[in-house]
View 1 (cartoon, rainbow, N blue to C red):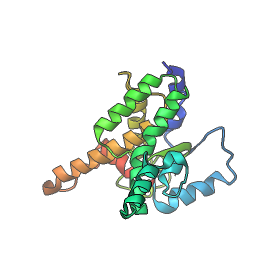
View 2: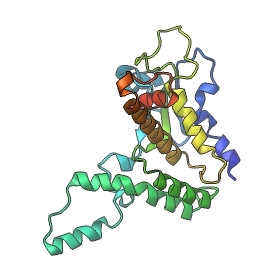
View 3: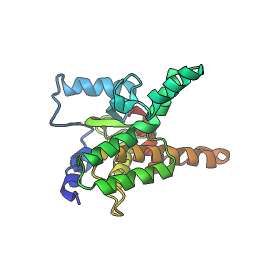
View 4: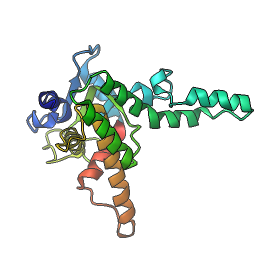
Length: 239
């Protein structure tokens, strides 16, 4: 069932459980990468300088400049040729990019399942079906090979807590990690050991929940800032 493979993600998804509470920053680096600059400098450039809680590399297909076939919307070439023959105006680059973001992750999931790069291809396909049914925008895909976190990042203190202060019991970054972990470890058989789609869904769910909470409480003032989905969405703005 891929249990050991999923458990190996613990340090990647929930690093705050592995460090004492006075640890502020953590860097997760996949074995396939080599860090060629001081981690302190990287943390400053990606987190501290921007007042962010989480930094990660975007998936190449979400950058808007990738020309890889996988990143192109299904049927884009055929549609373009048909339009050219009929004399119809070609779609704008922005429209093509938006369509690609909505399609490529499904294609990638099927390629992963077909190639056996997951312990349970059926679960991955069911996961895709569940995500499609949710109607959420899953374009916030990341390459999880490099993750930088400020564990003291909190919604009420955008630039982190003062040095020496205790870490919040469940800050924004930890909330997002917990949501990611819950999605990755779902026991219903409709979630795979692939952490990228699980992260995109956890982030989209947090953003969607925060938007709904804000709209519902607009007349009563700001939503509760200790709400985990709200914290998760706040932290994920840097993703």
